[in-house]
Length: 625
Ligand SMILES: *[C@@H]1O[C@H](CO)[C@@H](O)[C@H](O)[C@H]1NC(C)=O
Ligand SMILES: *[C@@H]1O[C@H](CO)[C@@H](O)[C@H](O)[C@H]1NC(C)=O
Ligand SMILES: *[C@@H]1O[C@H](CO)[C@@H](O)[C@H](O)[C@H]1NC(C)=O
Ligand SMILES: *[C@@H]1O[C@H](CO)[C@@H](O)[C@H](O)[C@H]1NC(C)=O
Ligand SMILES: *[C@@H]1O[C@H](CO)[C@@H](O)[C@H](O)[C@H]1NC(C)=O
Ligand SMILES: *[C@@H]1O[C@H](CO)[C@@H](O)[C@H](O)[C@H]1NC(C)=O
Image (cartoon, rainbow, N blue to C red; front, top):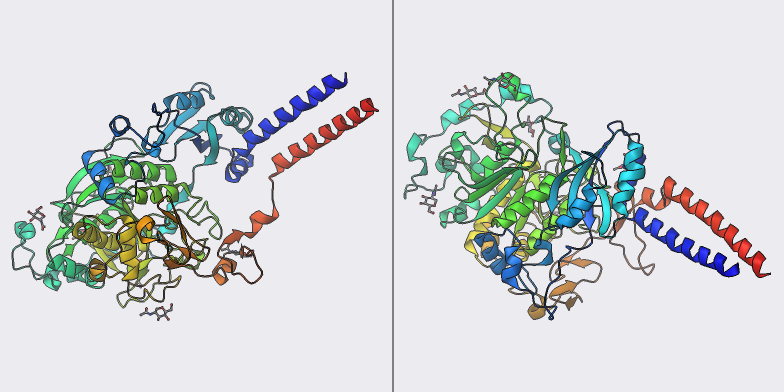
């Protein structure tokens, strides 16, 4: 009898801990969403797996058979070449993160729903996850059957909500999204266009000696280029030739005259899973409402456009991969899984650089979550840097409300906005990251940026936003990539921030200052990693990576963090208490999160379990006596 009871207790405990573990696989964000009164009866989630279900058939663990591994991936020649030259591969250029997600696991997850209850969207090899939508008759079924079925699988590591973002906050402070219709009446700048010379049609791409890289050549785009000394690199003959740039954005109006000679290597619409990346605008005022708000066209033109005397992009002779990851005509939301897929797609096709003018903030706690470790997009961005691809992102237009993901990434070059005089524009998001790294990295023109409009093939407009500061800098960095064929993203990051206008006095408003393309071209970043360079400021080099003491960051621990303080409190966060009373804190935590520990569902269950356990304990005591 006693034995039976003890056995029962034992089994119960095992069962209890299992159950608890399944629940632990769900993030707080997802638990909250499941408990919300969701009338749609549908939810979009990420399912993360704990392995690739792949055994390396070799006795030597460190040795990976590259040819075989390679055959499992879809990397092209350019991607492999770039990884070899610029990646920070430790043992092999193909890593486990490159292997495909296990089909077996995917099928088992899909079997957790009846009929068409589960729809699969994206697969991320790097995150080892899939994004799915569960559609059911009622939320109870999703909450009590489908989700528990998925979380009970031993190969499921965790489940999270797919973060969504309401687009208009991107250009909140400008008239850009809100007053779509009015804008078209007032912004076409005919007077300025007439002023510019050299508008002689077909000779646009004729780059003879008569190009002086002066105002006549750049037209109205001269301001945004001159401010960052990008014209000096053009003069030296760097124009982006041979550099592959990925752009993730809304649709692109490719008929515009500035794109006449655009070299497009690939295009993909991640939302519709087809090759339609065109802006939906068809020239009528009705369709303005349905257009992709011309955002993609605008950002692309600043980087890639070429119409002599009108608009010259910062890397006008580069090659492009165009990814449409945002759609505004459907529910007016953007979802992070499309971005993740687009980065992996571009990387595998050899992109050296990605320019992303989108930021995701709504679903993150700005005080605590933007520490480079939480957002899935940010993780993807940092993995891209490891594989040799530079990530440039707009920091966001939220001003004092802080930055969005993926701008918080460790090696993401986040760009803020200034006016023509170099003064920060109020809407430009203020840093730092939640772990006190300096953000933004650099600044560029984000006020009245001259770019291509979508009204017709010769339409030009002026827009505001860090969305446009970003491609200006990205193009400048493309020229650095062309000029220095072996620089890694870490060295490029170093060159960019160390040579910016205010690099010795960085702050959270202007970062390291204005980007200076010419100065970063001449900068001499150290070659190698910490195994030959060592770590600065007391960092320790382990496996070619520096473990930095708190207060420092960067691949050699060479950058100093600012102390956690005012900004954290402004965002309603709390600075983590240091080890010693006197030691400063470098981490901003979420105050609210600290107070309400466990969600309702979990705590009631724990309580119930506690009573049952007590009861069992009393019975045992009773029996023993
Ligand atoms: C951009 O900002 C300026 C003020 O700096 C303002 O006059 C202009 O209307 C804004 N443009 C748009 C498109 O919102
Ligand atoms: C782009 O580079 C090619 C050589 O790769 C050259 O023939 C062409 O003239 C360049 N175009 C421009 C606009 O500079
Ligand atoms: C343009 O698009 C709008 C909105 O989709 C549509 O109503 C209109 O018929 C289209 N016009 C033409 C000429 O295609
Ligand atoms: C292009 O569109 C703008 C803005 O609607 C208009 O002012 C301009 O006249 C158009 N140009 C041509 C050539 O149609
Ligand atoms: C550099 O930053 C310091 C402090 O952050 C600021 O006072 C100064 O005006 C900045 N200088 C320039 C040239 O931007
Ligand atoms: C901080 O809390 C105050 C008071 O609850 C609130 O008004 C404010 O919007 C919060 N700020 C942020 C950035 O969440």
